[in-house]
Length: 151
Length: 185
Image 1 (cartoon, rainbow over the protein chains, first blue to last red):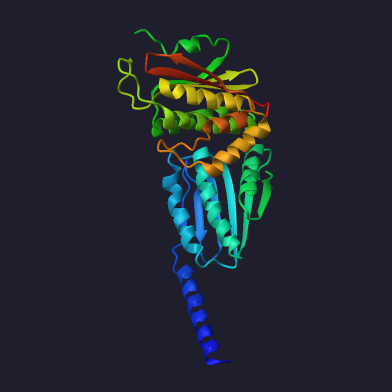
Image 2 (image 1 turned 60 degrees about the vertical axis):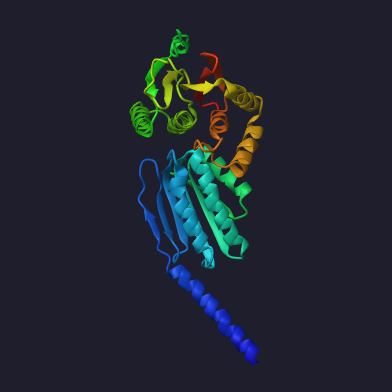
């Protein structure tokens, strides 16, 4: 190993550990659901993110902006595999744009050669929710799994 | 000027009203109406699929009012409402009917009517493509709407949007939207 190689390696290891430090320093987001906003569990060190419940606020940008900003930071040093579980019962059209923003962040993580998987859950017979998942699947270049919840 | 925003409803007979509201549409009111109607649909054991569809469409139509109503014209009976609208939910034979009404500026009528005609002239597949296009390309407006409300309503019901513009004065019209939610789609 030449001296140049050695310094390159040290430099690379420093960058990598800095990036890992970035992620471990990230505060997880846990938000309890309300009748109009979903439960959120985003933990950078688990690499499993969840959006669950109802998303029907009048002002969805206010709710989703902190999540999109958080993903922007996570995107800098993501885990090798990130799994996203979407279990929505209802969401309004205003939320649908914000959810797309969340998926666009995931798409850029995937584009940077990291594994990203979206599990889109929908209740049995809820064709509207299945179609909504298929809409995102056709827009976003990230693998989607459609999972029917049978009661 | 005599103009009764409720006239339109008197033409619709033979259907049972579940809820009627006229006045200021704010966030608390939307919450209360949604809760009341959801409880009601559960208590009458409405088919879960139809119940879910009705709830979705109620959210969309009420928030459409919330985001898009224009200021009430001068001289109108209710000057206190910041977001004046009317809303009615009716039970019909094989589903429900949601009717909303709100003021729009006359200069905005043409654009809104063109949008409604475009939606009504489209097949289900074309509506799905339109929905995806708007979702992916249009930003949320200053009024807080995403421009998807009407397209979503047409897509989820599978029915044509029934609407009417009634001229109020030189500057304002009243816009009625009549949404039939049944098990068709």
